[in-house]
Image 1 (tube, rainbow, N blue to C red):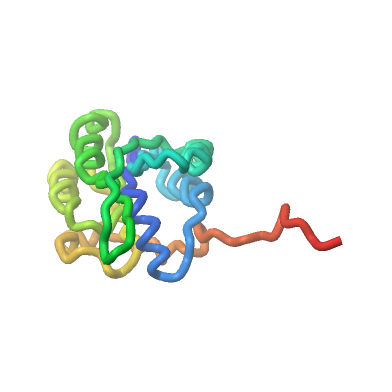
Image 2 (cartoon, rainbow, N blue to C red; image 1 turned 120 degrees about the vertical axis):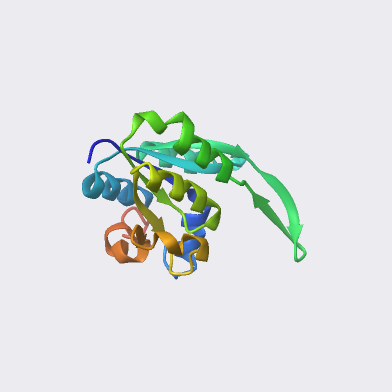
Length: 171
């Protein structure tokens, strides 16, 4: 199979699994990528928010290479929303910056904006899988259904579980 890299749309992954009623354990997810697919590098594309340093450190310690995108704040339905649109950076890294360095790629997103990348990687025999966070992935990815793996299929291996360890009990 050669060198395998993963390109992860962090927001799509996080919101996608949460909409299915569970949370992902990123350390377990990184281990899963390594153990199951031999992923050497896992690039996580993520919005840069000032007070999220603890999260960024945790992700880096789990083995992800973070690619930051500045975020934009706006109001939607009277509620402040923060958006860091990482699509262009993910495509640029997969199709140009890192393209010569890997043999197979895993795209982690259900976003139809990546259909062009999936098509490019397939044509060049570099597409290994598309990990869709849930079954509501874009119809634009349907032509690549043979490559699509629902993250829920390996939920038991990557689900966050509160252990209770380190929780202080009452005296």
